[in-house]
Image 1 (tube, rainbow, N blue to C red):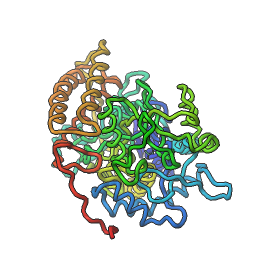
Image 2: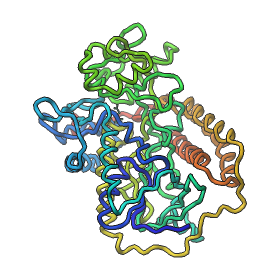
Image 3: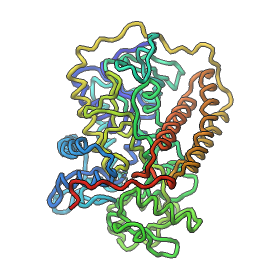
Image 4: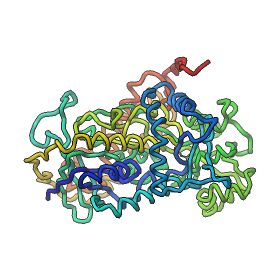
Amino acid sequence: MQKRVDFLVVGSGIAGLSYALEVAAYGKVCIVTKSTADDTATRYAQGGIATVMYTPDSYEKHIRDTLIAGDDLCNEAIVRMTVMESSDRIKQLISMGVNFDKTPAGLFDLSKEGGHSEYRVLHHKDQTGAEIEKVLLEHIRIHPNITVLENHFTIDVITQHHLGEYVDRKTDDIQCFGAYVLDKSTNDIITILAKSTMIATGGAGNAYSVTTNPGIATGDGIAMVYRAKGTVENMEFIQFHPTSLFNANEKPAFLITEALRGSGAVLKDRKGNTFMEKYDDRKSLAPRDIVARAIDNELKLSGEDFLFLDARHLGKEILLSHFPGVYAKCLSIGIDITKEMIPVAPAAHYLCGGVKVDEFGKTSILNLYASGECASTGMHGANRLASNSLLESLVFSHRSALDTLSKFEKIEFVEGIPDWNAEGTVLNEEMVLITQTLKELQSIMTSYVGIVRSNLRLKRAADRLNIIFDETEELFDKSVLTEKICELRNLINVSWMIIRWAQQRTESRGLHYNIDCLRTTRKKLFFDS
Ligand code: SIN
């Protein structure tokens, strides 16, 4: 079956929805999402959205904090542009009905997170992402030009390769014509042709055994762009959130928002002693890479599985009014955070690299955009500053929409794209081939490509990954496609990139810490005095 739309959007988090709403005034939009529309990483974002609101904060301070966290690998021009344009994007969100918390005096109630020198994080209690997702979806649902295909899995983007032309990574005019999409309810594969395609599929936390990401975060967009010979970068920079709730085998791991530390909660060991002062002057509020590494080291020294976050001294009123989600979740497993410390451990949380895009969200493939966690814009460098991702999505989806609208009328639909070729495939009746391989993959990535790496660990990971890569490609080629085999293949593709990029980096920097590589001294930045 073939379908034509002006704008195809893959993914239904903040990046995909905000892009869709902007282009929808000019043509038909189809949003494809592999689960229900609200099953996205956006919904899980607790802490909030960083933006400069009041003095003494300033754009320069926000830019500086972002560059410091990014450990010299941010693109300063992109950081500057994103920070300065974020105010307009956030005003737009507020005008659409997003409700950020205010103080009794009517000012926005700003919180603080690791690496921020000022209070600048707008939030809706500890459920900011859920509030944004809800409001955007309300607008999407009533828009006459937008169709949402839920439970549809995007397999691959379509390029001239599907017309029989040879393309490789050196081809400079690869074009995107749309995507092949699996309807999960019928198993039909639909060809969706589009003038422009936006990839907004989120991250790949499920490459690891413990992640704060929802199950949908399987690196689909990055893997499909890479297979289409698009450019991907910075894949070695995996951010581990220092404080996920330690609750063995819970998936996803429940996030204990960094805003809790911003409000004064302190990391402690089992005996109730603080330890962060051994690692950084900013203690529990140092940037995430430093805090996660410190916790990893403490756990390796003690042999334990978790440490504690002590929020008791904040008092019941603050905890219940500002952190009702954290309070309720902990209580549901028997921990009263007003009286007991919270057991925490790091969890894979955010992929700083991804599909390389320019300042308009354009990938290296014509008519293909990327925004959100799957994109690498230059904003995060080697380590993302907390709460900088929702604003990055808004700014880049807006800029992508502007670029799309400036050219889409001149783009013709391509003729002659064949339907997906499923010849010779059979139903795979052994799910264990997929589930066991996924467990192996997660175990390899967690043991060898985690917070602290070494050359030997990376080599072990690469050798083992090669085996499951070959086995899974063989299985993929002969199987009737299902979401699960496609997700596994995508996670393997993305993990291969993470390992390869990690092996190529010969320094320890930001989130990539290799005990065999010296830490590169940060160059003196313009603001160091
Ligand atoms: C948090 O609330 O700690 C997460 C915020 C983020 O990852 O930006």
